[in-house]
Length: 459
Ligand code: SF4
Image 1 (spheres, helix red, strand yellow):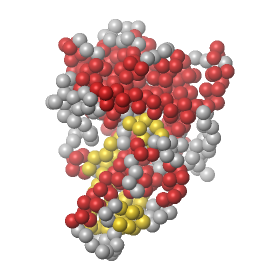
Image 2 (cartoon, protein in one colour; image 1 turned 90 degrees about the horizontal axis):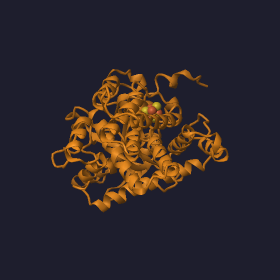
Image 3 (spheres, protein in one colour; image 1 turned 90 degrees about the vertical axis):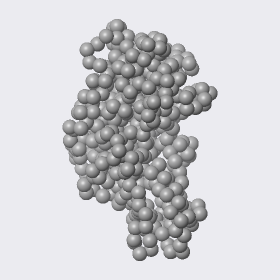
């Protein structure tokens, strides 16, 4: 398996990679299908678009702004186009329209309020995050339809793709890469045989597809975007949208730490940094999916702390991001990074394992210590459910990223004090996460039907 670092970590907008970014990408793809259809079936009759959301997308889509994302996608936007835009104003301008203007097709009827169906019936059997897009005639006849699945991290699959796969992936076969590791063990074996670090093997795989310059520029842009997002979060206050009236806390916490550094410790700084990112995400602003939006605070928090407090260099930032993506690619390949598939262990748990590996690499850890650090961080997230209150990526998500960063930091420290030899391998830990996710009740997989989501009093 191979997934590029520039696909696993990508610039987009909040609040959710699977419920915001994936549906937006699918909507935009459906527009391209309509163009293709129309070029072969030109007609003067009025056309209309309908979208039906299934499973977790219908259960928590409102809180995750899935409808807003679909409207943006149908209006030809992709997540990365929105990174520096005022999304709220953009939405205000297009939300009430009864038509979508499609290049080469003309006006197609679509109302955000009436034509997105949050279908709370049974989910599609293939995957919990299903969406059916339909092109209808004036009389309501279905002229063309496509079913998409949002499989986590902003990736989508069509129905024929998802049926061919044991686990829903969007990756390339390893055959053409110099280091075709598809498990943590094969990664360690190849590292030992070649004498190369995990980051260097990942780099050599990447530059079989793109130039080294393009790769470095991409890594630098990711880091710049992570910093911009985190610092915007540290400098913004107010109430988060969605109706829970949750105030932003990162700015105030950060202020306290700056004023009383002697009373602060690493945990405090990591929480402030991670929460700053996740407050930006909850506000629907620009964020780097790492590896999902709900878990987007862990990796930047660890890296920001490393560069600000431990004098990390630009070269180390690149090494960190390459190591992070090697581990994230393994988890995505062998299990899942989606809360709707395996619960929060796959989101914050994966982010924590990735961050631990990255930090261990730049602090001089051996490949064995890096694998150990990732395993420790993931192990202590096993079984963690996804139960966001009101389907908003706020409670428990924002604080949880702070704790994911703290666990990553602790996992690295522990791994660096040992030889790298350890009892439970990362491969076995990922397998346990997959099995735990399969046996987890649907109530705890991003449906907001269990856990914290149902213990609050409705009013
Ligand atoms: S609880 Fe975890 S998996 Fe669920 S939405 Fe929040 S961060 Fe994502």
